[in-house]
Image (cartoon, rainbow, N blue to C red; front, side, top):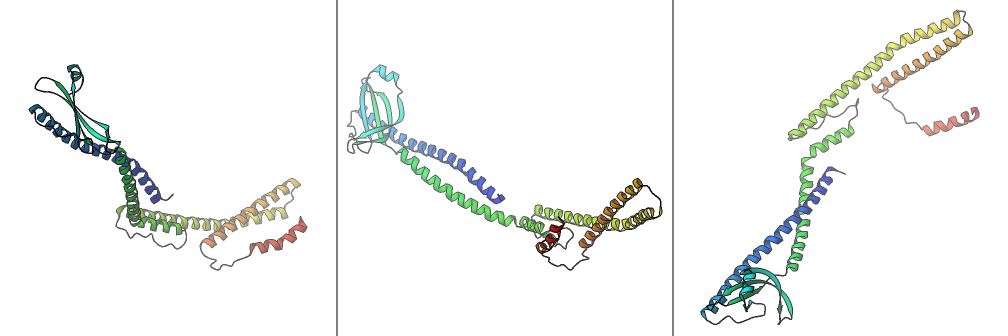
Length: 306
């Protein structure tokens, strides 16, 4: 897998938990803010009702529709002492006009009238559907995820390719580099210090490789040339021993073995010389041959021998 694709994949995977965390925090912060606003409204409405009741004034009309609604219930002292005097909570409220239940935010508070009688006041205001809010947030989070993913990956790929041009140029040069041949210098047209150092190091490594290659060719050529004379002398001395000395059968057999080994060394030396000449470009002309045709010509001869 290419580096840019691996980066894009990791970015997309990292975005998933980040977006999920952001959506969760966003949901709870929104719910908290809405509840705070609803609680302030409930508190003001309950204070208005209590003040009017204690003052003996007319209370607001009861409403079980979509607007604010309340109920006042006389309670005893034991019940009042067992319940918190102010409590906020969410509940489902039945709406007769719609013949269905709707989510509501409720304030339950306990107070005393002028005759020291306990009352429980419940004030309710309609609130939002949490399931609808979750679905809406989820939809927009998924949409935002894909928009961010496409934008970030597209920008990353564009920036990556723009920034990594010197590296791609170096890789292309390395693909075409062959020791011992005429190679173009390493392209180093970049202002990025890291890539500049990398190109300089690659050029120095290529120069060292060329020097070692030339030294190797020179050593092989010199060694092969220097070995020709002693090998020829050894061959002549073996032939002289075979032709001019009286030897028994065992000695003759040993000399023949030495002669075969020496012949193998001579052929190996000639091969090294040939390879050195080829590497040095002393055979500039080349001819294409049909190897299959040559083998087919030899098949008939070797079939008879077989």
